[in-house]
Amino acid sequence: MRLNQKITLFSICLVALNLLTGCADRGMHDLKSYVDEVKARKAGHIEPLPEIKPIETFSYISDGRRSPFVSQAQSEETGTQNEGIGLSPDFNRRKEELENYPLDSLRMVGLLEQLGSTWALVQTQERTIHRVKTGNYLGANHGQITQISETQVELTEIIPDGQGGYRERQASLALAGE
Image (cartoon, rainbow, N blue to C red; front, side):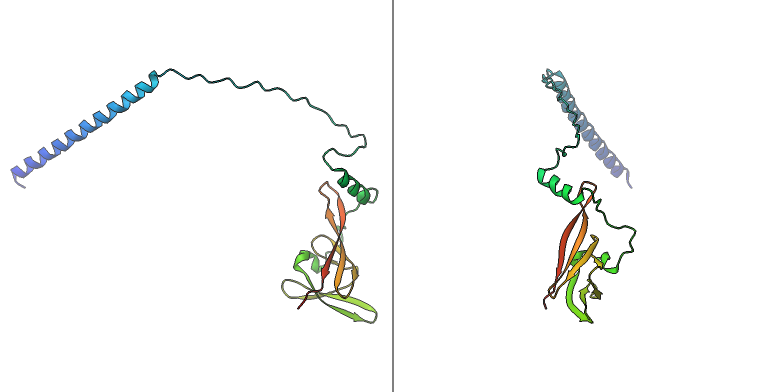
């Protein structure tokens, strides 16, 4: 590299450095003046928070009365179904195969009658067909078959009532159409 080229390169670097330094000082000056202006402003007035009035508390003592959080209809329905009988599923009973399926995933596909006995043919999601009779259990809600007819399987399910107890609900599987 020649000496003239070195001098030219050096002078270009000096000019660039000068420009950068000048820009930096000018940008900082504007910023500093703006910050000083904001700090000089008078502080605004903030309204105090409103006074919070305490709510009067009330202790409810039931003394055998119904819960105030349950409607009258629910109270009567639960009382007639659970009062005195202690309704609950038998958790010690060995579960049957069809209790592993939700009721809406099962289909009644036929009926079988032989020697005075009637069985319903129930199909699972996997297309496996099971033979069931009155007294068998099916569905995820402890449903016990109460009656089998040509068009449907009727059962009684034991479901939670939402208040720590259980209640009975009638359900059915209708014969599936082709």
